[in-house]
Amino acid sequence: MDHSTLRSQFPALAQSNDGYPLCYLDTAATSQKPQLVIDAMNHYYQHDNANVHRAAHQLSARATTQYEAVRDQLRQFINASRREEIIFTHGTTEAINMVANGLAGQIKPGALILIDTAAHHANIVPWQELAKRTGALIKPIPLTADCRLDTAAYDALLRMQPAIVALSHVSNVLGTVNPVTELVAKAKQAGAITLVDGAQAIAHMHVDVQSIDCDFYVFSGHKMYGPTGIGVLYGRYKSLDSLSPLITGGEMIKTVSFENTVFNPLPNRLEAGTPPIAEVIGLGAAIDFINDLPSAQTHNNEQALMVYLQQSLTALGDIELYGAHADNLGAVAFNLTGEHHQDVGILLDQQGIAVRCGHHCAMPLMQSLQLKGCCRASIGVYTHKADIDRFIAAMQSVKELLL
Ligand code: PMP
Image 1: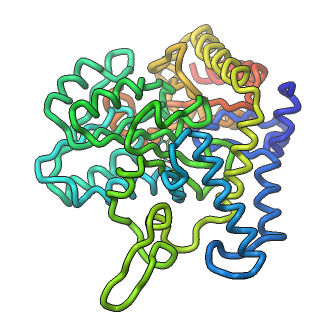
Image 2: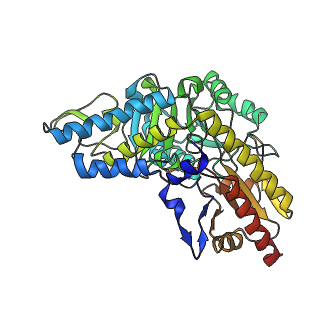
Image 3: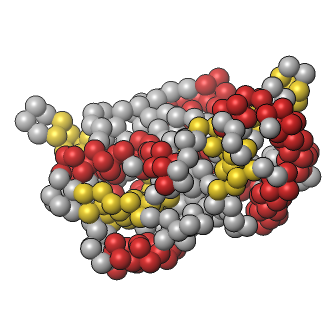
């Protein structure tokens, strides 16, 4: 498939704003959706709309078959060993909350929770709430000067035998990649429960949860060309089964009486209530879309674009890049020297360029970089070299205006 055919599958990219064709460089916030995802959700609502699991009628049977088939697709997509290890959530945030809340009974006062400094707030705040409830302590894993996770400091922290280690796979701000297989292996040796936030990794690399060997791996559908409102909590069966459910009610029970309730086995035990059925079906279509991409070629293209983006920004001059490495994925963080990130973002928007500016839900990272905020340009499979060239030309004009 050539690049323009691939790009033409994303209807939202075909628009212009104020006469400027859209140049979408905000994929890390949410990706655009291919037509087949939109069609799959519409088809469900038009033909198969029914609640799953409950009824004897054909519509419900069709909805249930499609819904459960996506669990199988996901099992294969991330190489989980069992379909029961895939739990549908509303997103990464909910998935991490489910784990943090579900572990409360296992965490003792004084237990240590390690979190990487570049973590998204979704991978910080739920652990802080857990710490408040249990008397556990949070310690950040510092970064090196070039914004990589400081492995020497990590090794030292592991000697304190943490109960939980929560890592990002790829930073949503910097695009830096944590060597999670290695980090998880060390955490396991130290006896910790491990969670990897894969929200920014899942669309840019092949994820194999058995090879990472973490207890929990979480991600959102909307960052991988799927709909909003759907996410995945993968957990090793035993680890998942040890969680107490965050939400209880219908669907997750075997029997209920006013004296006693018996929960269903996994995965239902952690999926109370009517799930986001259309969104699950849309996510299934997104996986089909990704599986149909020539994966090596896509990854090479994205990698080449990332390097081109970093080099073009550097060549522009008066640019500060943060944690830029050739092996980063998806995102580049930068500031125009001396200028406020919001001003840059607004001026870019006036030329049809969509980037994100602010703290990117990573205030501790901003503090460690001694920044109030920064701009972030992020790419997806539909991004073309011409998008980067337009962005750089727009940055040149912003620079001439502001400096
Ligand atoms: N973690 C990371 C690394 C993210 O980039 C995001 C989304 N910006 C989240 C967690 C939260 O994802 P969601 O808002 O889809 O729950």
